[in-house]
Length: 499
Image 1 (spheres, rainbow, N blue to C red):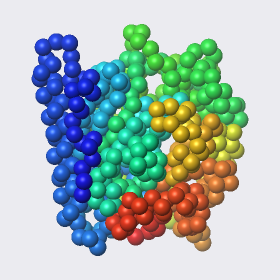
Image 2 (image 1 turned 180 degrees about the vertical axis):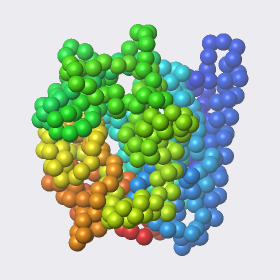
Image 3 (image 1 turned 90 degrees about the horizontal axis):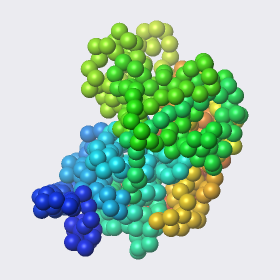
């Protein structure tokens, strides 16, 4: 097993970081920087020791306390990898606008480390406990994705523990470039990131919001395509773009503009609920304003709108709900209890109802097929609201290649706008229909519209269709090269097959 050269702390020539200041704190800051790298190296050594302790005939997996996956996990009695030392931001460099980050660092901690310097990751997924490594190997998206693409597109280099038990460094142009490009959407089946060097961008302290209402889904679709190209609407710049569909006649785009102008801001971390604030019946546009911190986490307090399943949107309950538990990570614990004990199905059974099918998915369709998908979905799947998030692959930049094979395990076309559609709820099962009937119908429709879907939740593809959608012959080549003894589950087994 070999440690990558990048695990060494930066040389004095390369350190132009948060640790270097123009005052007499320089020495203490440099010492703290070295301490951060030393702690990281110690964490990597513990990770490697835990890998060696796993029996050679057992699958390797993470020993994580939290997860943002909704699909079933394979049962495994072997101990997991110790990632307890890989949960911190190692270094932020405001001069180069980059950060070195351990793979299991949550975005909550990453943002807390970068915002004091007026910087943020190029894409910040909506939930605080999503990890940087998870967003890269499992994809992520947010309201900057129409201009910054997906989280893995701002990665400059990655240290990866492969299935072979070696830690290697992958960059866009080194000997491991194939792994660099194949790592996104591999969901830990090619290895686990121990360190990622990422780009950051400058942000302003406030975000001015416009909630623009649409009464027609085709009008909404046209507006998305126009705003993505122009990066403006009605003469104002658009730095952030997402939206919500409540029904075919009521949908909104939420347009954000960065600003340093002081002024009053709203608070959606207590009694007020962000998604409810979007709706209005007056003029076509409603305005609001948030701090950049509260904007980045605007969806987390209520897990978009999913907190209503726990009664927390009832004012009488919310008033007494501890504020520290108004966050997605706590709702996740409640979901885990439901999965373990079948609470929701038991309640439905007492009402004389059949079990419900979980429909928790994010899909992408080309922007010009958005209205078609939404019309079909609203007619066939009784779930609302629906989240929208436009995205485009980044223009060729620091990471080079402009080929449509750039990210083979999730091959979106360059220079084409897509819209992520997110829906997270459940529907009644119908007697005589196959397991996962609603999810299967969604998969068929998405494929018909030349789209893709994320793999964090239930999937039902057969092996041939799955391979065609997620990597083709590239994935087996990567698997053989970096996990020759199949210590890690393969992608189809992990994403589709039930264990």
